[in-house]
Amino acid sequence: MNFTISNRARSISLGLIILGAVGAVVGILGDHTDHHQRTWASLLVNGFFFFGIGLGALFFFALQNATETAWSVMVKRVFESLFSYVKWGWIPLVIVFVAGSMHLNHVYHWMDQSLYHPYMVVGEGHDAQYMDEAVQGAVANPNYDSMMAGKKAFLNIPFFWIRTIAYIGIFVFFAGWFRKQSLQMDKESGESLVKRMLLNYKRSALFLVFFAV
Image 1 (tube, rainbow, N blue to C red):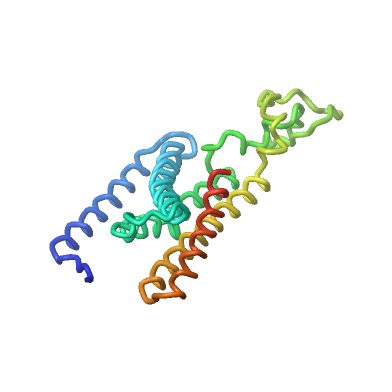
Image 2 (cartoon, helix red, strand yellow):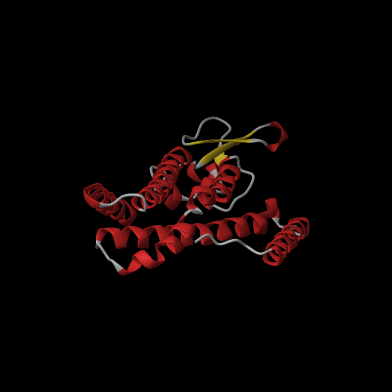
């Protein structure tokens, strides 16, 4: 049975989308914080909120496969619809991450490179060059944070992007793979269905280990 959304529900949904877009524009124009910090923070929180819902559904779906739970078959389409958001839900997060890497926002404090160098040389136009050694003309960097500097091996932009791309890529892969396998199982029976269920069991266990890490 296919569900068809009514014209009334479609119109209400479209109206709410437009209202939300207008509200977002008003919020951005009214945000006078440094680098529009409030706007970026709101985008990050909302992005993580909905992406987290999708990941939660993906985790629960994999858990049902790994434990071979039978009752969840009745509601598995609900979880599939929820974790389908994972395939696109990473976009708002990546926008914030890219902007932070380009220093267009300071949502992540550790992305400020001035925190990691104890000395600085101020050039023309008040442009500062940060360094680790006290060369001629260098002065103490007031932004230097020894605690953050000690975590530089982990809190650095290249390593952050390696982790981010790996996490998002694996989550998107499993979301698409589970959905594809679920649809394929509806068309199969007998031995082929048993083999696919066993494959789902193994992949689900693998995903749960990765998700826990």
